Image (cartoon, rainbow, N blue to C red; front, side, top):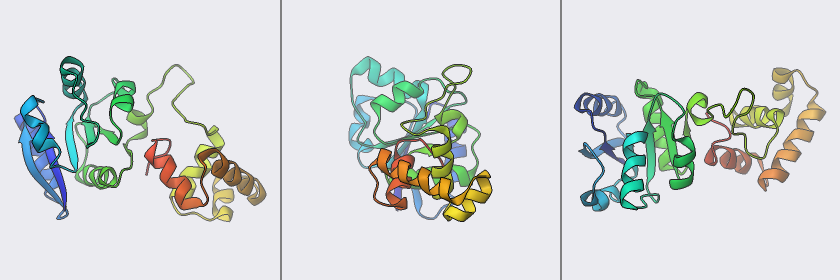
Length: 200
């Protein structure tokens, strides 16, 4: 059972989240609050995943100096603000829009409970300028190949999908392994997901 703590100021949004999460028998909301506070520390560490709004979270630790980074946190927001702060203050995190669907929300909770990063590409990788986004150590093509690896595609299928030769795919896969210090596809995909360079 994945234990979830809701820290959301809006009663309507909390009710909506409870309803969405109730569609998954493996997820249970163990507590809910309207804001972060010192009294939440014990409850927080009883949860596997905390769901909150990024503005609410960023305001509290910045003001009080607490470090709740050991618990996975799923942030709800509708733009790419605060992403850099989130990335540096929380070890396991995800970000979804406030109007997320039940399948998206539950999938994100499951991913975070396993130590992975989760969210939509638009929110995980907000544009830093006209042509630059957070990509990690991989090239754009290597990121595409890794994303296809995450879908379980074989080298031949990746070659067809990207319009390149199978030999070129093998070259990119080898480069990905080297850059991510991975011995196989599973390790490479796990590293890509954990750091938010690819999303499922």
